[in-house]
Image (cartoon, rainbow, N blue to C red; front, top):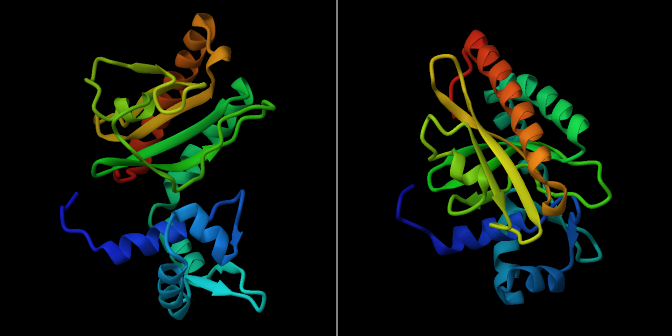
Length: 222
């Protein structure tokens, strides 16, 4: 990833990343509280984002995500339609078999991005937004991106969040190309030795099946 950075752009992106499926509208005060930015800074950033359709503000002064983001989201999905078509059913199956959150992440420079996820069905489960970006310095998913080829599984406990555990495997096609990482994540107390062994087997089975499918459909690695 390049070292050149534009602070104003990063602040605008931070503002957009504040929105999520759990909270998708914000007042000016709430945005200031969540980002730590001064209200005057937010007003300047929001004005530019509104101009290009990335934010909208209603008559009550409440901010919403704008239509330009929906257009870009559609374009991004259309670039690799087979990836979601192939991977999503396996995530659903993993989630249904384990009741834990199943996810698929790809690498982007020195970060990883959660591309697809199916949220667990336990009352207490790991919540992660599709499109969320994380550093590669901790957690099973992150460590699998740099793991040696002979390491099939990585297990982490409390590395990124103290109460969570994760089991992760690399997704490679039959040519050996690395496409990303599959993971199951949930409360640490549910991940005993037998459970980790079971989840490892399920993930490896899914990775094997997907690896063959990815080779067949010739989906480019990301």
